[in-house]
Length: 99
Image 1 (cartoon, rainbow, N blue to C red):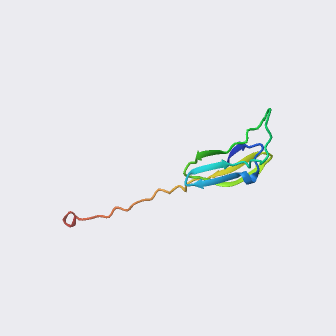
Image 2 (image 1 turned 45 degrees about the vertical axis):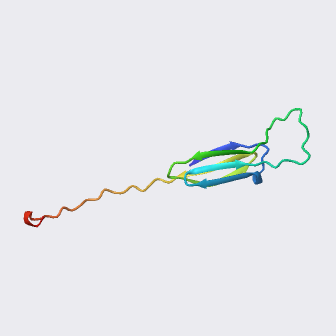
């Protein structure tokens, strides 16, 4: 079990988008801008659009995502490829004249 966690204080769940294309996992955030935004003297959180991409290993799968208290958790599982048991190959006898 693996996890990616992003701290996204101030974002809402509706502001976030997670996409998986092949092995590329992309997280995008587009915060809603208030129409009458005040002029800030100090703003501790900068609410700007962002896009982060992660390249996952071939055998990694996204098993789910949760957004709680400003933290986005993306859970991953690693699917181990099935090991192929060794196979014994029979050697057939052939006469030298038929080869």
